[in-house]
Length: 106
Image (cartoon, rainbow, N blue to C red):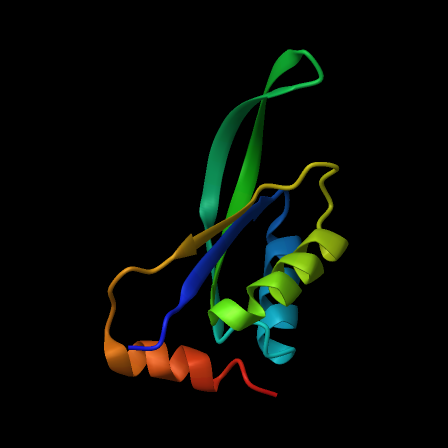
């Protein structure tokens, strides 16, 4: 099975999430991206507890595209300190993993 990675971030507006997803897929940095529904987040920021509404984006990509994808997310992200998490998939459908790999080639 080809290895795949899931890169996750959250942003403060649905249009921003949609733009990140579309840009990553169009640029072949991710084979697909899923924008999740609105979530309420509670976090520490500048010595205070904050609460805000965010949208999550999950990108499916090949390991050799992770660095470029993370760099692109970071450059376009509206947050001063963006949450960008990378997870390696231990096991998955081999045909899906091959599809992810194939669709992250330029």
